Picture (cartoon, one colour):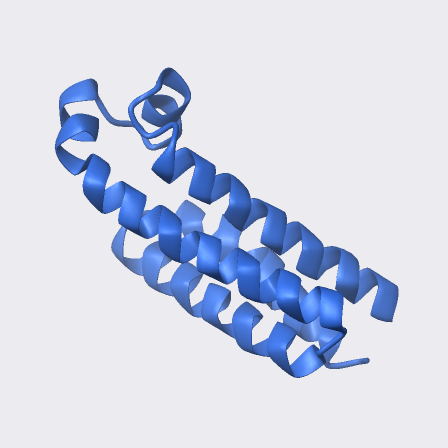
Length: 116
């Protein structure tokens, strides 16, 4: 169970690194526009805000990787809880898909860590 929990924590970290790249680097590129269903004008107007969001997602990834590489389950639980909270809030305020993409894997990780 511990190995599976580590895999899920790693996957959640990779998801957040990907979100960082989307929001900080690819926001105004075709993949960013498609991913977030926006036009170039909106992307241009919101690029600084998106970069800020991307940075926060990077901090979540860094915390998860820190917990993973040190083997500290408490750190992993804390950052998975942060991701779950962010996913829940995003799902309620922006798009339900966020709850599934961010919150789902985080919840699975928390459940698996409960058995470690």
